[in-house]
Amino acid sequence: MAKVLTGVNQFGALLSVVIVDVVLAGDNAIVVGMAAAGLPIERRRRIIILGIAAATILRILLAYFAVQLLAIIGMTFGLLFRYEAPNLGSGIAWGLVYGLVWWFLGWLTLLPILLGGSFDWSAPAVSAALPELIGHLMYGVAIAFVFMWLERQYNAWLLLDPRLAVREARRRRPIGTPAPALWLFALGLGVLLPIVLG
Image (cartoon, rainbow, N blue to C red):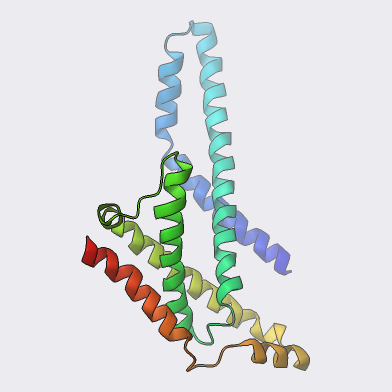
């Protein structure tokens, strides 16, 4: 049953990305039409149909890849912070740290390298990327909220066995440990340093 729900959720996410791509894909028709404009009339119709079909298939494949990549990034939150967040407040705080880490790793480091450049952590580059920081922080909070909601939904089912319940309770970090000070320091440092240095 859980596998079916996961498949339905992934299909829903994929379908929403495909719908947005199709709505915003008017530029593909213009480019294909411009490319086919110089061809003879008998070949023009065939080239337009093939070009639009190829663009649609490519968009669907790239949307599927984007959904899978976001699922992998979201799963890492559960792997890293499952036992660090005993309640919703600390889960959201860890989500903010998670968004901050992905902003440094993804936007400031990996994206420039994948685009063929080198990463730049200078003050002007960081201050130019501050709007993306807000998006990453919101993404981290959303991931934390969804993870905590799913964990609460399935917690009663998972802990039916008393041995599992005891083991899970031992793994959970108690409130009042130094972990919240760590996320507060990391979040403060990551948000305030670019603003102060920029």
